[in-house]
Image (tube, rainbow over the protein chains, first blue to last red):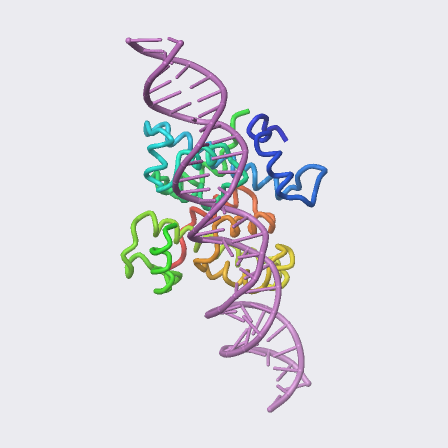
Length: 107
Length: 107
DNA sequence: TGACGACATGTCAGATATGACATACAGTAC
DNA sequence: GTACTGTATGTCATATCTGACATGTCGTCA
């Protein structure tokens, strides 16, 4: 369990949202959160590589800057569904998506 | 996803294979749908390998048999989020998940 | 200093996904 | 035939997600 800052950003919202457990996250919960964080990082990276601002991306997604910010922060209010749809909108292929999922984040 | 488009897709039953060829789906829409179908197939396969019924799996997921059936059918009412969480609950690793995403479906 | 651009964060009305239920259908066994 | 198991499908109340808005922070530039 070494996910440092981004994990910490999430922890508060998740522990409150889960509301039934308290002694830390179960295997499944942390697997889910870590996956979300990798997708979030992948989204930010791809957006930046394309030279887009959050506002630009929001326009493409028909969403808003604040939601894009939450996506990239791995906010508990963002679903994997939205993250993946956003990556797809940015032109991410299945193979690239697959890589994002399996690539360990830098410590 | 935009409501009207979804309703239209739903009305015409986009869960069938090769939907893109019959409906006027954009690249992004069909990428999303095909991804969902692969996850759905992966879920069914893993459930069956473990010798579980839909009722059994529903219990594990704290969901219902009908929702499991919809998941495995790739129903429009099911999110990628739920599909992936379900796969995680079945013990699917990141690597396996990645494989499900990139494995082309049998025609 | 102020103004600007990019990003973060909190809130909330409205949209969507979810579990649960009822019911139907296909096999299998008796 | 009945009974049972497993799966599919339609509906619905409500729990959750989403876009939009307001506002704040931080860096840069003149």
